[in-house]
Image (cartoon, rainbow, N blue to C red; front, side, top):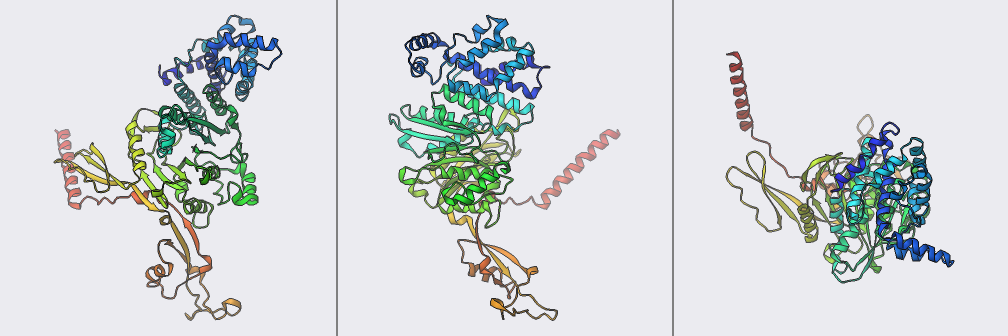
Length: 612
Protein backbone atom coordinates (compact mmCIF):
# COMPACT_ATOMS: atom_id res chain seq x y z
CA UNK A 1 0.00 0.00 0.00
CA UNK A 2 1.54 3.35 -1.00
CA UNK A 3 1.43 6.37 1.28
CA UNK A 4 -1.45 8.00 -0.61
CA UNK A 5 -3.61 4.86 -0.38
CA UNK A 6 -2.73 4.48 3.28
CA UNK A 7 -3.52 8.10 4.08
CA UNK A 8 -6.82 7.73 2.20
CA UNK A 9 -7.65 4.73 4.39
CA UNK A 10 -6.85 6.72 7.52
CA UNK A 11 -8.86 9.62 6.07
CA UNK A 12 -11.93 7.39 6.05
CA UNK A 13 -12.08 7.97 9.81
CA UNK A 14 -13.48 11.38 8.86
CA UNK A 15 -16.74 9.64 7.97
CA UNK A 16 -17.23 8.90 11.66
CA UNK A 17 -16.53 12.49 12.66
CA UNK A 18 -18.86 14.15 10.16
CA UNK A 19 -21.60 16.05 11.96
CA UNK A 20 -19.90 16.19 15.35
CA UNK A 21 -16.78 17.86 13.99
CA UNK A 22 -16.26 20.55 11.38
CA UNK A 23 -14.10 19.50 8.43
CA UNK A 24 -11.37 21.88 9.57
CA UNK A 25 -11.25 20.02 12.91
CA UNK A 26 -10.73 16.48 11.57
CA UNK A 27 -6.97 16.75 11.91
CA UNK A 28 -7.24 17.32 15.65
CA UNK A 29 -8.44 13.74 15.98
CA UNK A 30 -6.83 11.90 13.07
CA UNK A 31 -3.26 13.16 13.46
CA UNK A 32 -2.76 12.24 17.15
CA UNK A 33 -4.51 8.89 16.69
CA UNK A 34 -2.24 8.13 13.72
CA UNK A 35 0.83 8.91 15.83
CA UNK A 36 -0.56 6.84 18.71
CA UNK A 37 -1.16 3.84 16.46
CA UNK A 38 2.33 4.17 14.96
CA UNK A 39 3.97 4.20 18.41
CA UNK A 40 1.69 1.34 19.44
CA UNK A 41 2.90 -0.78 16.50
CA UNK A 42 6.57 0.12 16.92
CA UNK A 43 6.56 -1.07 20.56
CA UNK A 44 4.44 -4.19 20.00
CA UNK A 45 7.26 -6.75 19.62
CA UNK A 46 9.07 -5.67 22.79
CA UNK A 47 5.99 -4.99 24.92
CA UNK A 48 6.20 -8.15 27.04
CA UNK A 49 9.92 -7.72 27.71
CA UNK A 50 9.47 -4.07 28.70
CA UNK A 51 6.65 -4.86 31.15
CA UNK A 52 8.72 -7.62 32.78
CA UNK A 53 11.75 -5.32 33.06
CA UNK A 54 9.61 -2.53 34.49
CA UNK A 55 8.22 -4.80 37.22
CA UNK A 56 11.67 -6.17 38.04
CA UNK A 57 13.45 -2.80 38.34
CA UNK A 58 10.55 -1.15 40.17
CA UNK A 59 10.50 -3.99 42.71
CA UNK A 60 14.24 -3.47 43.29
CA UNK A 61 13.74 0.26 43.77
CA UNK A 62 15.81 1.20 40.71
CA UNK A 63 15.11 3.92 38.15
CA UNK A 64 13.89 1.79 35.23
CA UNK A 65 14.24 4.41 32.47
CA UNK A 66 17.58 3.35 30.93
CA UNK A 67 16.73 -0.35 31.24
CA UNK A 68 13.34 0.09 29.56
CA UNK A 69 14.80 2.04 26.63
CA UNK A 70 17.30 -0.78 26.07
CA UNK A 71 14.57 -3.43 26.22
CA UNK A 72 12.25 -1.47 23.91
CA UNK A 73 15.03 -1.00 21.36
CA UNK A 74 13.74 2.56 20.91
CA UNK A 75 14.33 5.92 22.54
CA UNK A 76 10.87 5.64 24.18
CA UNK A 77 8.73 3.01 25.87
CA UNK A 78 5.29 2.35 27.41
CA UNK A 79 4.80 0.72 30.82
CA UNK A 80 1.03 0.23 30.53
CA UNK A 81 -0.17 -3.37 29.96
CA UNK A 82 -2.71 -1.88 27.55
CA UNK A 83 -2.45 -1.24 23.82
CA UNK A 84 -5.04 -0.11 21.27
CA UNK A 85 -6.20 -3.67 20.68
CA UNK A 86 -6.75 -4.36 24.39
CA UNK A 87 -8.59 -1.06 24.82
CA UNK A 88 -11.36 -2.47 22.63
CA UNK A 89 -12.01 -5.23 25.17
CA UNK A 90 -13.55 -2.81 27.67
CA UNK A 91 -15.90 -0.51 25.80
CA UNK A 92 -17.47 0.99 28.92
CA UNK A 93 -14.16 2.19 30.35
CA UNK A 94 -12.32 3.09 27.15
CA UNK A 95 -11.93 6.75 28.11
CA UNK A 96 -10.19 6.05 31.43
CA UNK A 97 -8.14 3.21 29.92
CA UNK A 98 -6.98 5.38 27.02
CA UNK A 99 -5.76 7.99 29.51
CA UNK A 100 -3.93 5.28 31.46
CA UNK A 101 -2.33 3.94 28.26
CA UNK A 102 -1.04 7.38 27.21
CA UNK A 103 0.20 8.03 30.74
CA UNK A 104 2.30 4.86 30.42
CA UNK A 105 4.51 6.40 27.72
CA UNK A 106 7.92 7.79 28.61
CA UNK A 107 7.92 11.61 29.16
CA UNK A 108 9.17 12.56 25.68
CA UNK A 109 6.39 10.55 24.02
CA UNK A 110 3.73 11.90 26.40
CA UNK A 111 4.73 15.43 25.43
CA UNK A 112 3.70 14.65 21.85
CA UNK A 113 0.08 14.09 22.88
CA UNK A 114 0.13 17.17 25.10
CA UNK A 115 1.19 19.22 22.05
CA UNK A 116 -1.75 17.78 20.15
CA UNK A 117 -4.03 18.75 23.08
CA UNK A 118 -5.22 15.16 22.84
CA UNK A 119 -6.97 15.29 26.23
CA UNK A 120 -9.53 17.75 24.84
CA UNK A 121 -10.29 15.50 21.86
CA UNK A 122 -10.68 12.38 24.01
CA UNK A 123 -13.26 14.18 26.14
CA UNK A 124 -15.07 15.49 23.09
CA UNK A 125 -15.14 12.09 21.37
CA UNK A 126 -16.37 10.40 24.55
CA UNK A 127 -19.14 12.94 24.94
CA UNK A 128 -20.22 12.37 21.33
CA UNK A 129 -20.14 8.58 21.77
CA UNK A 130 -17.40 8.26 19.13
CA UNK A 131 -14.31 7.37 21.19
CA UNK A 132 -14.70 3.60 20.91
CA UNK A 133 -15.52 3.71 17.18
CA UNK A 134 -12.51 5.90 16.35
CA UNK A 135 -10.17 3.80 18.52
CA UNK A 136 -11.46 0.64 16.82
CA UNK A 137 -10.85 2.16 13.39
CA UNK A 138 -7.20 2.93 14.20
CA UNK A 139 -6.60 -0.36 16.01
CA UNK A 140 -7.36 -2.11 12.71
CA UNK A 141 -4.78 -0.09 10.71
CA UNK A 142 -1.46 -1.90 10.38
CA UNK A 143 1.32 0.65 10.86
CA UNK A 144 4.06 -1.79 11.88
CA UNK A 145 7.55 -0.75 10.69
CA UNK A 146 7.82 -3.99 8.68
CA UNK A 147 4.73 -2.94 6.71
CA UNK A 148 5.18 0.86 6.63
CA UNK A 149 8.80 2.01 6.89
CA UNK A 150 9.83 5.34 8.40
CA UNK A 151 10.15 7.12 5.05
CA UNK A 152 6.68 5.99 3.98
CA UNK A 153 5.25 6.96 7.37
CA UNK A 154 6.65 10.46 6.95
CA UNK A 155 4.89 10.74 3.60
CA UNK A 156 1.63 9.58 5.22
CA UNK A 157 1.85 12.36 7.81
CA UNK A 158 2.57 14.93 5.12
CA UNK A 159 -0.30 13.75 2.94
CA UNK A 160 -2.71 13.99 5.87
CA UNK A 161 -1.53 17.47 6.83
CA UNK A 162 -1.89 18.60 3.22
CA UNK A 163 -5.50 17.39 3.14
CA UNK A 164 -6.35 19.09 6.43
CA UNK A 165 -4.69 22.31 5.26
CA UNK A 166 -6.70 22.27 2.03
CA UNK A 167 -10.09 21.88 3.66
CA UNK A 168 -9.37 24.50 6.32
CA UNK A 169 -7.77 26.95 3.86
CA UNK A 170 -4.50 26.86 5.74
CA UNK A 171 -1.05 26.99 4.19
CA UNK A 172 0.16 23.43 3.69
CA UNK A 173 3.56 24.62 2.51
CA UNK A 174 4.27 26.01 5.97
CA UNK A 175 4.46 22.45 7.27
CA UNK A 176 6.54 20.57 4.74
CA UNK A 177 8.56 20.65 1.53
CA UNK A 178 8.14 18.28 -1.45
CA UNK A 179 10.43 15.30 -0.95
CA UNK A 180 12.12 15.61 -4.35
CA UNK A 181 13.13 19.20 -3.56
CA UNK A 182 14.62 18.02 -0.28
CA UNK A 183 16.52 15.23 -2.08
CA UNK A 184 17.99 17.78 -4.48
CA UNK A 185 19.06 20.03 -1.60
CA UNK A 186 20.61 17.13 0.29
CA UNK A 187 22.45 15.92 -2.82
CA UNK A 188 23.98 19.35 -3.34
CA UNK A 189 24.73 19.73 0.36
CA UNK A 190 26.79 16.53 0.57
CA UNK A 191 28.27 16.35 -2.94
CA UNK A 192 31.66 17.81 -2.04
CA UNK A 193 32.12 15.84 1.19
CA UNK A 194 33.77 12.56 0.18
CA UNK A 195 34.96 11.88 3.74
CA UNK A 196 31.34 11.83 4.93
CA UNK A 197 29.93 9.78 2.05
CA UNK A 198 32.74 7.20 1.79
CA UNK A 199 31.52 3.87 3.15
CA UNK A 200 33.25 2.77 6.31
CA UNK A 201 34.13 6.25 7.61
CA UNK A 202 32.47 6.44 11.04
CA UNK A 203 32.14 10.22 10.96
CA UNK A 204 29.70 12.17 13.12
CA UNK A 205 28.03 15.28 11.72
CA UNK A 206 25.23 17.60 12.83
CA UNK A 207 22.26 18.77 10.74
CA UNK A 208 19.88 21.56 11.74
CA UNK A 209 16.53 22.83 10.44
CA UNK A 210 15.18 26.00 12.12
CA UNK A 211 11.77 25.53 10.45
CA UNK A 212 11.54 21.78 10.91
CA UNK A 213 7.83 21.29 10.14
CA UNK A 214 7.08 17.57 10.32
CA UNK A 215 10.80 16.75 10.06
CA UNK A 216 10.90 15.88 6.35
CA UNK A 217 14.21 17.62 5.64
CA UNK A 218 15.88 16.05 8.65
CA UNK A 219 14.57 12.59 7.74
CA UNK A 220 15.57 12.69 4.06
CA UNK A 221 19.06 13.94 4.94
CA UNK A 222 19.50 11.12 7.45
CA UNK A 223 18.28 8.51 4.95
CA UNK A 224 20.56 9.89 2.21
CA UNK A 225 23.68 9.74 4.36
CA UNK A 226 22.85 6.27 5.70
CA UNK A 227 22.35 4.95 2.16
CA UNK A 228 25.85 6.13 1.13
CA UNK A 229 27.66 5.43 4.38
CA UNK A 230 25.89 3.30 7.02
CA UNK A 231 28.80 3.90 9.40
CA UNK A 232 28.30 7.68 9.40
CA UNK A 233 26.12 9.23 12.06
CA UNK A 234 24.02 12.33 11.51
CA UNK A 235 22.74 13.99 14.69
CA UNK A 236 19.58 15.93 13.93
CA UNK A 237 18.49 19.24 15.44
CA UNK A 238 15.42 21.34 14.75
CA UNK A 239 12.90 23.90 15.95
CA UNK A 240 9.25 24.24 14.99
CA UNK A 241 6.58 26.80 15.84
CA UNK A 242 3.39 24.86 14.97
CA UNK A 243 2.47 22.45 17.79
CA UNK A 244 0.98 19.76 15.55
CA UNK A 245 3.94 19.76 13.18
CA UNK A 246 6.29 19.73 16.16
CA UNK A 247 4.48 16.73 17.64
CA UNK A 248 4.77 14.76 14.39
CA UNK A 249 8.42 15.72 13.96
CA UNK A 250 9.15 14.64 17.52
CA UNK A 251 7.35 11.33 17.00
CA UNK A 252 9.35 10.71 13.83
CA UNK A 253 12.64 11.44 15.62
CA UNK A 254 11.63 9.19 18.53
CA UNK A 255 11.03 6.25 16.21
CA UNK A 256 14.34 6.86 14.42
CA UNK A 257 16.31 6.83 17.65
CA UNK A 258 17.28 10.50 17.54
CA UNK A 259 17.59 12.52 20.74
CA UNK A 260 14.24 14.33 20.84
CA UNK A 261 15.68 16.93 23.21
CA UNK A 262 17.31 18.31 20.06
CA UNK A 263 13.87 19.18 18.65
CA UNK A 264 12.69 22.42 20.23
CA UNK A 265 9.22 23.98 20.19
CA UNK A 266 8.90 27.72 19.67
CA UNK A 267 9.59 30.63 17.35
CA UNK A 268 13.16 30.47 16.00
CA UNK A 269 13.39 34.21 15.34
CA UNK A 270 12.28 35.46 18.77
CA UNK A 271 13.54 32.56 20.90
CA UNK A 272 16.48 30.60 19.49
CA UNK A 273 16.16 27.12 20.97
CA UNK A 274 19.77 26.26 20.06
CA UNK A 275 21.46 29.47 21.15
CA UNK A 276 25.24 29.27 21.00
CA UNK A 277 25.29 26.01 19.03
CA UNK A 278 26.95 25.66 15.60
CA UNK A 279 26.23 23.00 12.97
CA UNK A 280 27.96 21.19 10.08
CA UNK A 281 24.94 21.23 7.76
CA UNK A 282 21.65 23.11 7.73
CA UNK A 283 18.45 23.00 5.66
CA UNK A 284 15.41 25.24 5.76
CA UNK A 285 12.24 26.12 3.89
CA UNK A 286 10.91 29.14 5.78
CA UNK A 287 7.41 30.45 4.98
CA UNK A 288 7.36 32.72 1.92
CA UNK A 289 6.30 36.34 2.24
CA UNK A 290 5.14 36.05 5.86
CA UNK A 291 5.46 39.19 7.99
CA UNK A 292 7.47 39.15 11.23
CA UNK A 293 5.47 41.80 13.07
CA UNK A 294 4.74 39.43 15.98
CA UNK A 295 8.44 39.08 16.77
CA UNK A 296 9.50 42.56 15.62
CA UNK A 297 10.26 43.82 19.13
CA UNK A 298 12.60 40.94 19.97
CA UNK A 299 14.32 40.95 16.57
CA UNK A 300 14.93 44.70 16.55
CA UNK A 301 16.23 44.56 20.11
CA UNK A 302 18.75 41.84 19.21
CA UNK A 303 19.80 43.79 16.12
CA UNK A 304 20.31 47.01 18.11
CA UNK A 305 21.87 45.52 21.26
CA UNK A 306 24.10 42.78 19.84
CA UNK A 307 24.84 43.93 16.31
CA UNK A 308 27.17 41.47 14.59
CA UNK A 309 27.57 39.54 17.84
CA UNK A 310 23.92 38.54 17.42
CA UNK A 311 22.12 36.97 14.49
CA UNK A 312 20.84 40.05 12.67
CA UNK A 313 23.87 42.34 12.50
CA UNK A 314 24.00 42.89 8.70
CA UNK A 315 20.49 44.36 8.53
CA UNK A 316 16.75 43.77 8.79
CA UNK A 317 14.39 43.20 5.85
CA UNK A 318 11.02 44.91 5.63
CA UNK A 319 8.44 43.64 8.11
CA UNK A 320 6.22 42.23 5.34
CA UNK A 321 8.65 39.36 4.57
CA UNK A 322 10.83 37.70 7.19
CA UNK A 323 12.41 34.96 5.05
CA UNK A 324 15.81 36.71 4.96
CA UNK A 325 15.87 36.69 8.76
CA UNK A 326 16.08 32.90 8.55
CA UNK A 327 18.98 33.27 6.11
CA UNK A 328 20.83 35.41 8.67
CA UNK A 329 19.89 32.99 11.44
CA UNK A 330 21.50 30.12 9.52
CA UNK A 331 24.62 32.19 8.80
CA UNK A 332 24.98 32.75 12.56
CA UNK A 333 24.82 28.99 13.08
CA UNK A 334 27.72 28.20 10.74
CA UNK A 335 30.63 26.42 12.36
CA UNK A 336 33.79 28.55 12.03
CA UNK A 337 35.91 27.64 9.01
CA UNK A 338 38.87 26.81 11.27
CA UNK A 339 36.70 24.15 12.93
CA UNK A 340 35.62 22.57 9.64
CA UNK A 341 33.06 25.10 8.48
CA UNK A 342 29.45 24.61 7.38
CA UNK A 343 27.24 24.43 4.33
CA UNK A 344 23.52 25.08 4.21
CA UNK A 345 20.62 25.21 1.77
CA UNK A 346 17.55 27.41 2.14
CA UNK A 347 14.50 27.74 -0.14
CA UNK A 348 13.39 31.33 -0.78
CA UNK A 349 11.07 33.05 -3.23
CA UNK A 350 12.34 35.54 -5.79
CA UNK A 351 11.99 38.61 -3.57
CA UNK A 352 15.26 38.22 -1.58
CA UNK A 353 17.23 38.27 -4.86
CA UNK A 354 16.49 41.89 -5.67
CA UNK A 355 14.05 43.59 -3.27
CA UNK A 356 15.37 46.79 -1.70
CA UNK A 357 17.72 49.38 -3.11
CA UNK A 358 21.26 50.23 -1.97
CA UNK A 359 21.37 50.72 1.80
CA UNK A 360 18.13 48.82 2.50
CA UNK A 361 18.07 45.90 4.90
CA UNK A 362 17.68 43.35 2.10
CA UNK A 363 20.55 44.82 0.09
CA UNK A 364 22.80 44.91 3.15
CA UNK A 365 22.09 41.25 3.86
CA UNK A 366 22.98 40.34 0.25
CA UNK A 367 26.08 42.53 0.54
CA UNK A 368 27.16 40.72 3.71
CA UNK A 369 26.86 37.19 2.34
CA UNK A 370 28.47 38.10 -1.01
CA UNK A 371 31.33 40.22 0.31
CA UNK A 372 32.12 37.49 2.84
CA UNK A 373 32.16 34.96 -0.01
CA UNK A 374 29.46 32.75 1.53
CA UNK A 375 27.17 32.24 -1.48
CA UNK A 376 28.15 29.11 -3.37
CA UNK A 377 25.21 28.73 -5.75
CA UNK A 378 21.61 29.71 -6.50
CA UNK A 379 19.32 27.18 -8.16
CA UNK A 380 16.12 28.41 -9.81
CA UNK A 381 13.34 25.80 -9.52
CA UNK A 382 10.30 25.35 -11.80
CA UNK A 383 7.05 27.09 -10.91
CA UNK A 384 4.18 25.05 -9.40
CA UNK A 385 6.58 22.95 -7.31
CA UNK A 386 5.09 23.66 -3.89
CA UNK A 387 1.72 22.75 -2.41
CA UNK A 388 0.66 26.26 -1.42
CA UNK A 389 2.10 28.47 -4.15
CA UNK A 390 2.87 28.43 -7.85
CA UNK A 391 5.52 31.18 -7.73
CA UNK A 392 9.17 30.84 -8.70
CA UNK A 393 11.43 29.58 -5.91
CA UNK A 394 15.19 29.42 -5.48
CA UNK A 395 17.56 27.26 -3.47
CA UNK A 396 20.42 29.27 -1.94
CA UNK A 397 23.54 27.23 -1.14
CA UNK A 398 25.87 28.98 1.30
CA UNK A 399 29.21 27.77 2.66
CA UNK A 400 32.17 29.13 4.60
CA UNK A 401 34.37 26.27 3.40
CA UNK A 402 34.23 26.70 -0.36
CA UNK A 403 36.60 24.55 -2.44
CA UNK A 404 39.53 26.55 -3.79
CA UNK A 405 38.12 26.80 -7.32
CA UNK A 406 34.82 28.25 -6.06
CA UNK A 407 36.31 30.98 -3.87
CA UNK A 408 35.20 34.41 -5.03
CA UNK A 409 32.59 32.98 -7.41
CA UNK A 410 28.82 32.35 -7.42
CA UNK A 411 27.15 29.76 -9.65
CA UNK A 412 23.64 30.38 -10.98
CA UNK A 413 21.73 27.33 -12.23
CA UNK A 414 18.45 27.79 -14.07
CA UNK A 415 16.58 24.53 -13.46
CA UNK A 416 13.16 25.99 -14.33
CA UNK A 417 12.81 23.63 -17.31
CA UNK A 418 13.71 20.50 -15.32
CA UNK A 419 10.31 19.07 -14.44
CA UNK A 420 7.66 16.53 -15.35
CA UNK A 421 3.92 16.91 -15.02
CA UNK A 422 2.34 15.14 -12.06
CA UNK A 423 -0.36 12.61 -12.76
CA UNK A 424 -2.53 14.32 -10.16
CA UNK A 425 -2.11 17.87 -8.87
CA UNK A 426 -1.75 18.35 -5.12
CA UNK A 427 -2.93 21.83 -4.22
CA UNK A 428 -0.80 24.25 -6.25
CA UNK A 429 1.77 21.54 -6.94
CA UNK A 430 1.47 20.42 -10.57
CA UNK A 431 5.11 19.67 -11.37
CA UNK A 432 7.77 17.45 -9.87
CA UNK A 433 11.46 16.67 -10.29
CA UNK A 434 12.30 13.17 -11.54
CA UNK A 435 15.36 11.29 -10.34
CA UNK A 436 17.01 12.13 -13.67
CA UNK A 437 16.32 15.84 -13.17
CA UNK A 438 17.79 15.75 -9.67
CA UNK A 439 20.89 13.95 -11.01
CA UNK A 440 21.33 16.51 -13.83
CA UNK A 441 21.03 19.52 -11.52
CA UNK A 442 23.38 17.93 -8.98
CA UNK A 443 25.90 17.25 -11.77
CA UNK A 444 25.69 20.86 -12.97
CA UNK A 445 26.49 22.02 -9.45
CA UNK A 446 29.28 19.49 -9.07
CA UNK A 447 30.90 20.41 -12.40
CA UNK A 448 30.97 24.11 -11.44
CA UNK A 449 31.07 25.10 -15.09
CA UNK A 450 29.01 27.15 -17.48
CA UNK A 451 26.56 25.02 -19.46
CA UNK A 452 23.77 25.29 -22.00
CA UNK A 453 20.64 23.28 -22.66
CA UNK A 454 20.09 22.28 -26.27
CA UNK A 455 16.50 21.33 -27.08
CA UNK A 456 15.23 19.95 -30.38
CA UNK A 457 11.50 20.46 -31.02
CA UNK A 458 9.36 19.33 -33.94
CA UNK A 459 7.03 21.50 -36.05
CA UNK A 460 4.29 21.22 -33.36
CA UNK A 461 6.62 22.38 -30.60
CA UNK A 462 6.93 18.92 -29.05
CA UNK A 463 10.30 18.15 -27.50
CA UNK A 464 12.25 15.53 -29.45
CA UNK A 465 15.62 15.66 -27.71
CA UNK A 466 17.39 17.60 -24.99
CA UNK A 467 21.05 17.63 -24.12
CA UNK A 468 23.16 19.48 -21.55
CA UNK A 469 26.22 21.04 -23.19
CA UNK A 470 29.29 21.96 -21.17
CA UNK A 471 31.65 24.61 -22.51
CA UNK A 472 33.08 23.59 -25.89
CA UNK A 473 30.55 20.82 -26.61
CA UNK A 474 28.66 21.01 -29.89
CA UNK A 475 24.83 21.01 -29.96
CA UNK A 476 22.94 18.22 -31.76
CA UNK A 477 21.85 18.71 -35.35
CA UNK A 478 18.13 19.36 -35.76
CA UNK A 479 16.44 16.93 -38.22
CA UNK A 480 14.48 18.32 -41.15
CA UNK A 481 11.33 20.10 -40.00
CA UNK A 482 12.63 20.51 -36.44
CA UNK A 483 14.10 23.49 -34.61
CA UNK A 484 17.09 23.69 -32.29
CA UNK A 485 16.95 25.97 -29.26
CA UNK A 486 20.06 26.56 -27.13
CA UNK A 487 19.77 28.46 -23.81
CA UNK A 488 22.16 28.92 -20.87
CA UNK A 489 21.37 26.91 -17.73
CA UNK A 490 24.53 27.36 -15.67
CA UNK A 491 26.54 30.57 -15.36
CA UNK A 492 29.39 31.59 -13.08
CA UNK A 493 30.00 35.13 -11.79
CA UNK A 494 32.45 36.86 -9.50
CA UNK A 495 30.89 38.07 -6.25
CA UNK A 496 31.46 41.73 -7.08
CA UNK A 497 29.54 41.43 -10.35
CA UNK A 498 26.31 41.56 -8.32
CA UNK A 499 27.30 44.82 -6.61
CA UNK A 500 26.78 48.41 -7.65
CA UNK A 501 27.20 51.93 -6.31
CA UNK A 502 24.13 54.14 -6.38
CA UNK A 503 25.38 57.64 -7.15
CA UNK A 504 23.27 60.78 -6.78
CA UNK A 505 23.49 62.99 -9.86
CA UNK A 506 22.84 66.65 -9.18
CA UNK A 507 22.19 69.50 -11.61
CA UNK A 508 22.33 73.21 -10.75
CA UNK A 509 19.39 75.26 -9.61
CA UNK A 510 18.79 78.22 -11.93
CA UNK A 511 16.94 81.48 -11.33
CA UNK A 512 14.27 83.02 -13.57
CA UNK A 513 16.98 84.37 -15.88
CA UNK A 514 18.60 80.95 -16.28
CA UNK A 515 21.61 81.80 -14.14
CA UNK A 516 23.05 79.20 -11.76
CA UNK A 517 22.16 79.91 -8.12
CA UNK A 518 25.25 79.88 -5.87
CA UNK A 519 25.38 79.19 -2.15
CA UNK A 520 25.85 82.21 0.12
CA UNK A 521 26.94 80.68 3.46
CA UNK A 522 28.98 77.88 4.96
CA UNK A 523 30.42 75.03 2.94
CA UNK A 524 28.08 75.81 0.04
CA UNK A 525 29.29 79.40 -0.35
CA UNK A 526 30.14 80.09 -3.98
CA UNK A 527 29.09 76.58 -5.08
CA UNK A 528 26.20 75.75 -7.44
CA UNK A 529 23.08 74.78 -5.52
CA UNK A 530 21.39 71.50 -6.57
CA UNK A 531 17.91 71.50 -8.08
CA UNK A 532 15.95 68.76 -6.30
CA UNK A 533 13.53 68.56 -9.23
CA UNK A 534 16.39 67.55 -11.53
CA UNK A 535 18.05 65.16 -9.05
CA UNK A 536 18.56 61.62 -10.36
CA UNK A 537 20.40 58.43 -9.46
CA UNK A 538 22.54 55.99 -11.42
CA UNK A 539 23.61 52.47 -10.48
CA UNK A 540 27.27 51.99 -11.40
CA UNK A 541 28.54 48.37 -11.38
CA UNK A 542 31.31 47.77 -8.84
CA UNK A 543 33.41 46.43 -11.67
CA UNK A 544 33.44 49.89 -13.32
CA UNK A 545 35.20 53.12 -12.41
CA UNK A 546 32.58 55.64 -11.25
CA UNK A 547 34.21 58.67 -12.89
CA UNK A 548 34.66 56.87 -16.21
CA UNK A 549 31.01 55.73 -16.11
CA UNK A 550 29.84 59.26 -15.26
CA UNK A 551 31.86 60.77 -18.12
CA UNK A 552 30.50 58.22 -20.58
CA UNK A 553 26.86 57.88 -19.55
CA UNK A 554 25.88 61.19 -17.93
CA UNK A 555 28.00 64.15 -19.00
CA UNK A 556 27.23 63.87 -22.74
CA UNK A 557 23.54 64.39 -21.86
CA UNK A 558 23.96 66.81 -18.92
CA UNK A 559 27.30 68.66 -19.09
CA UNK A 560 26.51 70.69 -15.95
CA UNK A 561 25.85 67.63 -13.76
CA UNK A 562 28.01 66.47 -10.83
CA UNK A 563 28.05 63.62 -8.30
CA UNK A 564 27.15 64.20 -4.65
CA UNK A 565 29.76 61.82 -3.22
CA UNK A 566 28.33 61.92 0.31
CA UNK A 567 25.11 60.27 -0.87
CA UNK A 568 26.76 57.33 -2.67
CA UNK A 569 25.70 53.91 -1.41
CA UNK A 570 26.85 50.40 -2.24
CA UNK A 571 24.12 47.86 -2.98
CA UNK A 572 23.82 44.27 -4.16
CA UNK A 573 21.16 42.46 -6.15
CA UNK A 574 21.05 39.19 -8.07
CA UNK A 575 18.98 39.64 -11.25
CA UNK A 576 18.71 35.89 -11.77
CA UNK A 577 16.35 35.81 -14.75
CA UNK A 578 18.20 38.54 -16.62
CA UNK A 579 21.31 36.36 -16.78
CA UNK A 580 19.38 33.58 -18.53
CA UNK A 581 17.28 35.67 -20.88
CA UNK A 582 17.66 34.75 -24.54
CA UNK A 583 16.15 37.11 -27.10
CA UNK A 584 13.84 35.40 -29.58
CA UNK A 585 13.17 37.58 -32.62
CA UNK A 586 9.47 37.93 -33.50
CA UNK A 587 8.14 36.26 -36.62
CA UNK A 588 8.36 38.25 -39.80
CA UNK A 589 5.36 40.35 -40.87
CA UNK A 590 5.12 38.32 -44.07
CA UNK A 591 4.81 35.05 -42.11
CA UNK A 592 2.11 36.51 -39.84
CA UNK A 593 0.26 37.96 -42.85
CA UNK A 594 0.26 34.61 -44.67
CA UNK A 595 -1.05 32.85 -41.54
CA UNK A 596 -3.89 35.40 -41.19
CA UNK A 597 -4.83 34.93 -44.86
CA UNK A 598 -4.98 31.15 -44.36
CA UNK A 599 -7.21 31.53 -41.27
CA UNK A 600 -9.49 34.00 -43.09
CA UNK A 601 -9.80 31.60 -46.04
CA UNK A 602 -10.70 28.73 -43.71
CA UNK A 603 -13.38 30.81 -41.98
CA UNK A 604 -14.77 31.82 -45.41
CA UNK A 605 -15.08 28.17 -46.46
CA UNK A 606 -16.86 27.29 -43.21
CA UNK A 607 -19.36 30.12 -43.71
CA UNK A 608 -20.02 28.97 -47.30
CA UNK A 609 -20.72 25.43 -46.02
CA UNK A 610 -23.22 26.80 -43.47
CA UNK A 611 -24.98 28.85 -46.19
CA UNK A 612 -25.54 25.79 -48.43
